[in-house]
Structure formats: structure tokens, C-alpha cells
Length: 135
Length: 159
Image (cartoon, rainbow over all chains, first blue to last red; front, top):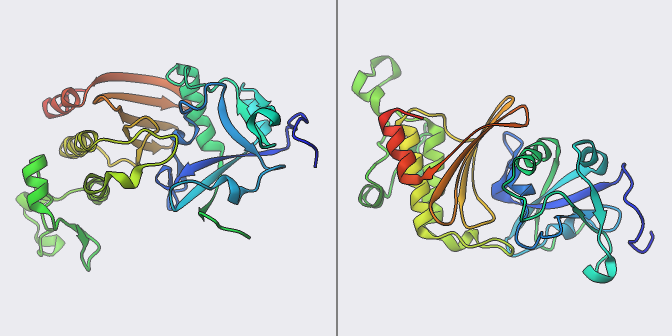
């Protein structure tokens, strides 16, 4: 495993945490809300590279459990978006990357709205993981 | 709200629903399906809507359960807006959403996916409500207004 500066390969998987209310396990429908940038996503939508971070660790937070949405980098690129590796010296953790087009400022524009819907259809959803789950 | 032996929802907090939101979920008739009168049929509701109202009532009673890092908290007023919108959509015989969810900005969304169509009502933290319809991934229709305006439009049979 490298130091987190390496380029993202098209075959790599990337993860995004999703609230349990954003996914219906019966119909297998994931809400596009899972890909909506928050105020913290001013540089782009935060994702985690499977190469560096375990799914169970992505699924940590205040809620008792979370799902994790998984996408292949090539699926994101095929939709016309770009994935950029975050500087691990800045984030403090290797493996953090962003979809540069999905920023908080652009969240209500037409194309980002459409991308969110497409990402939600393509994502594979894993979990739910309870906080502290370890395999 | 509880589920009966037949799997139907029955309101157990009717007084709260009726006083705050002006509607009530009625207990299903004990008549057999073949004996249903028009009046009973009028009172029948989509079980999907009952689940939606059930979920929203749980949030109304305890909004703190929706709090998470990175998300703005949802106010009681917005949850009440969502309950009232649900009641109006149900009364207008609209299909129940497939997902009802808190959004990241202190609002609530109703989402419905039907094949290539994806529709959403998004109530924001200020009480504005935006409708969006996507077809094959493309934004095809939008509409914006206060929740009260949407409710009024449904009661007029417009939109």
C-alpha cells in the first residue's frame, strides 16, 4: 500500500457513508441524498478509497448504524465527473478523495442534481454497519 | 400507531394527529372486502401513506433521533409541514413515496422512483418546497412554492 499520493485507478472502489433513512433495503432504493454535498464539501463530495479505508470505518458516526454506498471510480468518470485525491497531509488520513464537480456551492445546479440521481442508481449499498463493527 | 393482525396500520395517537394536523387515520372496516360500501372505500388509504405518516410522527415526537454530524437539525415545524404535505398528497390520491428522509440541510424529502422516472418533493429548512422530476436521469420538471401553496394546489386538484 502506498502513502496516499497515488493516482486513483479506474478499477478502484470508493465509499460514501449513508444514513439508514436514505436506503430502503426492501426495494433496494438508495436516495440521491447520499451524494448531496454538505457544507463540509466545499472542495467536492467526500469519498473514501477502498484501497486505504475499510467499509466498517467509513460507517462511523453519531448514529447507531449506517450503510455504505460503493462505486467504481470508472462509473463516476463515465458520468463526466472527476475524482481527485486529497492531500493526505491536509486530511490527516490517506484515502480521502473528492468528486470535484459536486461542491456545496453547486449543489442546486441542474447537472449536479442529475449526477446525484445517476450515482444513487449505480451505487452498490452495503450494510447496515453498526458503529464499532469489526470483521 | 400499531399494526393490526391483518397488517394494517391503526392510529393510536389519534388525538395528537387530529388536533395538530387536522386529519385522522381511520381504523380499517371489519367488513369483508366484498361487502365494502362506497363510504368505507372512501376512507381506505394506501398502506404506504400510513407508513409514511407513522415514520413522520416518530420524528415529530423525537426530532433528536435525526441528528448527525454534518447535518443541520430538523425543526418540529418542518416535520409538521411534511405531515401536512403527506396528508394533502394522500387526499389527492397521489402514490406514497418510496422513501421519506431527512436531508442534509434541515429539511425533509419525499422520493418516488418508478422505472425511468424519479420524483422528489424537498421541504427546506425555511419551509419552501421544491418539486423535481427526472426522466432517464435528466431533470424534466421543477416547481417551487411554500408547503401551504402546494397543499392548496392539491386541494384544488392542480399541479
